[in-house]
Image (cartoon, rainbow, N blue to C red; front, top):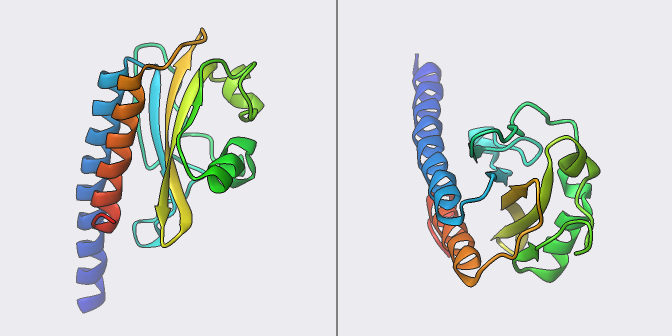
Length: 163
């Protein structure tokens, strides 16, 4: 059945892509020594939607965000900021550095500092990579922001072939 083969081929492509994306966020976690890194992206052909991470890496004790998809991520003030500013968002302390992230990120998942790297596709925000520091505020270094920029470029290449 040709349709089944096409579905199987697509599933295999998605599985291979997930391995690549997982490696990217794992490398970013190792580079930044953060608590959690995630990739949220809309890619219909791979069944990725920003409300659930397509990839995630966790340090010991960090809670996963992969089980909770009920929050409208695009309505978050931080995501609106990414759409408007079109650059990295660096928050050394989410209590004092605006815009405010979703309250659940702080209350349930313990995030106190974060960086978000936007992924633009044909001029539109297609997704973003998050780097979270749980438990305490943190001054993100130039090396940390460079690692996030590198990860954004790698994801863009993996998903869209560059550009």
